[in-house]
Length: 159
Image (spheres, rainbow, N blue to C red):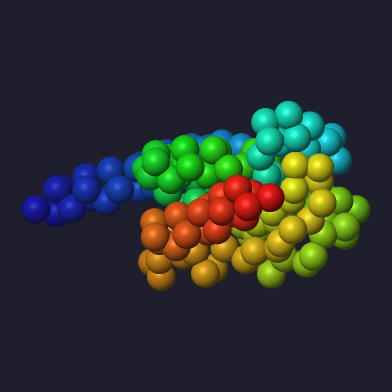
């Protein structure tokens, strides 16, 4: 019995060490990218595709950014709708690069991730905290997220 407990504890410790040493999943935030160049490229694409631009601040360090990535990976129809309306550009903010000069030009975010909606020519239309889109657990609410997308789809269709 004692031998099996020691083996189980050793296996758990080994498993924890392996998990801790594995890198976090890359979810598309580049700490070394030039945020102004990312914005310019995204604005050009949004204008060419006749879409809005959704800037998302965050980083691979951000738990809720991982939840957002997992939600969109799981909810393929919502992800497709999001990309139908928006060119999505992720901008890193975190210890490796706060991008202070870039974010100083936008309304202040309370946390990460945070959304800014821009027109196809780069004009700020809205600043949106993602908290109202959450499900109260560790993900996002499909209905609320879809409503967010459809609100902007209707707005662009009216123009």
